[in-house]
Image (cartoon, rainbow, N blue to C red):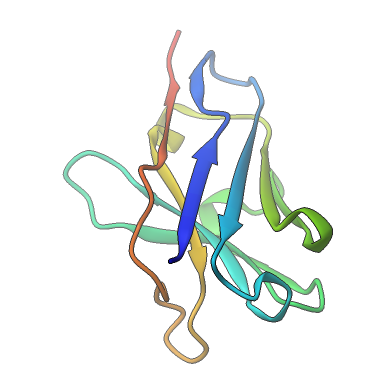
Length: 119
């Protein structure tokens, strides 16, 4: 059974930083591309960062230069370092394995972690 457990969200002021973690179980973590998605109120879920099994990364334009995705295959964990946070980064953040081709999510979603950027 696949389990994805996100953590590290919270309330932060604009310009602040957060580091999200996602622990995965039930999958062969090391061979999967992994990604962080987010869903803001009233909006569709979107992929914001992706990391391949080899460590190559891709970022959505709104987060380029501010967010960094990384992974620790020994711990079956993927991270998202978020710096210079803006109000528009407010969303629930989810991790998942990323399908090749359409970059959709492979598995059912976990509970996500709420990130709120507000003064």
